[in-house]
Each structure stands twice: as structure tokens, then as C-alpha cells.
Image (cartoon, rainbow, N blue to C red; front, side, top):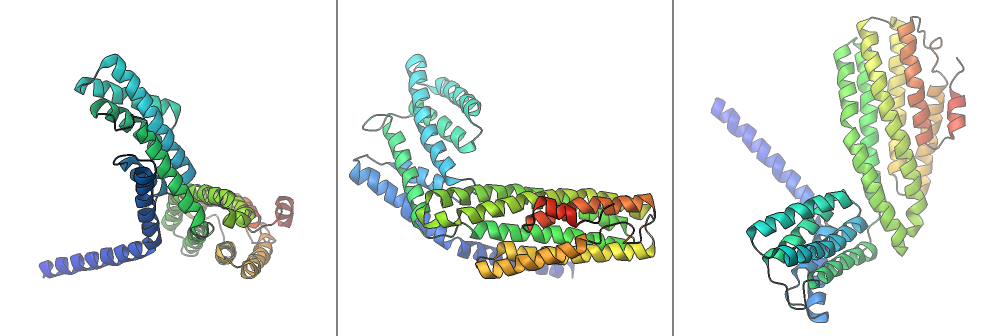
Length: 375
């Protein structure tokens, strides 16, 4: 019986992995075509146009620069080209002074890695500089001299940039998918807080705090995505019209990040308020209702920020602003029937979170603060 249960669990796990793999492969179809065409094209250009023999670095550098990483491609291209060139210079100089051999290769690699970390924090830059200096010491120079590899790396990087700028891909799509995930998590944090209040469950409030903490990597990842998209929108003529829109989305993400941080502070204080029974039944229900309504308004804000069509986006944002304004106007301890000091602190900590959300929805900073009832 136990064996049958184990086989069933294994089968479910395998089916889940297969479904996930199929979805991931389907979503990667266009990037895979781009990477294939780019790598082969860079190799062919370096071999047939420039006359280089076996220009593998043209293909590999284009794959590195065009890869699936969220890091901005322009930075990767620069890191590949500079790392390759500087690595060859370092390798050549140390080869001239130390000669060739295993211990010399170890010294060259060690020195190159430390030099790369001194010059730049980029992982690709360190890898390229170390790899090239090592190859200079261990392998004979290609026909045309050691800097042929540097030229090949620049060819690959250039092809990667051309593919990035010329192949139609909306730079807004990935950031909008990310902001939808981000706001979903924020809304769920508030819903968990609401449930914790209604059931007087401080453990659930603590879980909401942990969930809020776990969202921070997504915020950092989204900032990286926005830098990549902004880079494309700035340099690619077809996407330049999206630059202002991406700037506004980046501003909204800054306010959402603040709201997430404030939600963690709020959840921590709520845990204490529940443990100390600091809220009456009326106050508990009122604050829980505020939290649920705020989560619903965040869902509306998510639809607005993630929408590609201007008219639909403006309609969702307008609804989100209206809902958030209405909620903000009730954020006063007296209006929520809060009586004890610790309960008042819970309400006070929710007010800056509401200001952050209003600003994320496009409300002016002063207006957002003025909406809150005076204390």
C-alpha cells in the first residue's frame, strides 16, 4: 500500500515536471530561435567576412550576451568584450614575464580573477577576463594574433544587440507580468492579516509577515527587468515611444516596494495586537474589512499597471484610485472603533502603506497624504 502511494506521488511529481518543462520550452521558443540565428550568424560573419579561423568566441559571446538572464544585455555585451580584451592583455603580459606552464597558468588565473573583482562586480566580466588570460597561457594564439578572439567577442556582442533591437518584442510585457505577481503577493499579505484578525490567530499574522519578506527578491528581480526594458526602449527606435510608460511603471514599483516594507511592519505589529487582545470585536471587524477592501483595490491596481492597452489601463487605475481614496478616508482610530493604544498603533502603521498605494496608482504625494483624516 505504501509502495503504491509512493509510486503515485512520484508519477504526480513527474507529470508536474513535464508540464512545467513544456510550458517553459514553449515560452522560450522565440528566444531560442533568436539565440540560434544570432550565434550562427556571428560565427559565419567572423569566419567568412573577417576571415577568422574557427571563431568560436563570436558564437559563445553572442549566446552569453543574448541569454535568458534578466541582467541588461548592453552590460553583458560590454562585459564580454572588455573582459575578453583585458584578459588577453593580462595573459600576454604575464606569459611574457613568467613563461608558459601549469603553475604560471594558476598564477595568471588567480591574478586575473582578483583584478576583475577590483575593476567591476560583474560575474560575466570576471569569467571572461579569467578565461581569456588562462587560454592565452595554455593555448597557442589563433591565426591573426591573440586579439582575434577579442574581435570575435565584439562581433558576437554586436549581433546580440542587433537581434535585441530589431526583433519585435514589447519591452513592457515582462515588467507588467512581474508587477502583477508583485501586487498579487501584497494583496495576499493583507488578506492573510485580515483572516488572522477575524480568527484571532497571531501565527497567521506572522505567516503574512514571512510572506511579505519573501517577496523582496521579486522586487529586486523586477528592478533588473525594468533596467533591461528601459535599455531596449532607449536604444531601439521601434520601442522608444514606450520609454515614458516604463519610467512611470518604475516609479510605481518604487512605491509598491515601500508599501511591501510597510506591510511587513504592519503585520509584525498586528501579531502583537492579537496576542494582547488590543482590539474590540467592532474594531477587529472594521480593520479586517479595511484590509480586504485594500486587497481588492490592489487587485484593481494590478490590472491597471499590467494592462497594455491605454484605455483599459486608465479605467482600471481610475477605479483603483477611487477605491483607495475611499478606504484612506476611514483610516482613523476613532472611525474604526479602536480604543486601546496598541490598537491605535495598528491603524497608524497602516496609513503610510495606504499613501504608498495611492502614489503607486498615480496620486500626487501631497494629495495622498491629505486624503487621510487628520489626527
